[in-house]
Length: 343
Image 1 (tube, rainbow, N blue to C red):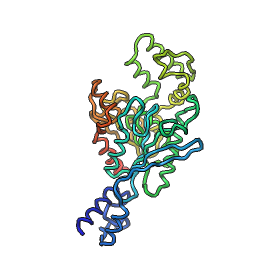
Image 2: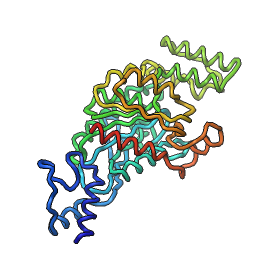
Image 3: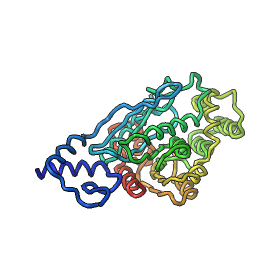
Image 4: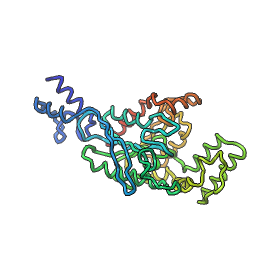
């Protein structure tokens, strides 16, 4: 029977026991006497890792997600993963960019005993029908409300003993707002900006544009900064500043992530890679200055899509477009270690 007992205890350990230690009575912290019948029962109710669809029903349609449960006995810690900007789906992909970064993040956490839910945002992929009919009607607050509703749903699920929001890139700001209006137990910023989006966007465009196009982009940002939409946009800038997306940009530009993080009353962590070409160490520093009790983890050689990359273009491109490349293991280990500390 020894190997069966060992297997059961391994399953219990994999569950990341939210209260007490695996193999102990949660009330007394004394070792549990595992007999044959207990072994059989635990083995039967502690299955291997499982993936299943999960749905958030809303008045305008369903928001579709994926639940990934680790091997072992519940209850599990759960991380709600929120994707970044634009039409990025639950796996971290878009039509023109496939890297599976968020899917790999979820799988890596499951291997370490943490459950995850990731989902297609309202208006994206399988959740397209839940979005407004007109692009002009999208607002950042919609996503924050949806994330808060996910937390409400998951907090009532007895399979989980805590819900942490992990927001990636723009999803970090959305996650902060959701944490303010939901029973979230903790929050993680993954490559999240520490400055208002207009400031960060201006910095990014200064590297990519020059001459009249850069002057036009700056002028558009100046107008949006004071709440004024711009009717005429050059074709080269149309994808970014088309009139139909400007109301969303206005809703996004209204928030300062550092100020929002400073208001959170739950444990927070700030994770940033050193080879991120979209969000920089300066953003992590700004967030940390606003929330000095937050744990900061700077991961050497991790880029914006959470993979190992150098700063040169070829290495970055491979990380953005190769789903076979793993996310950085140090990220996964750091997240689990931090969850163990704060939960």
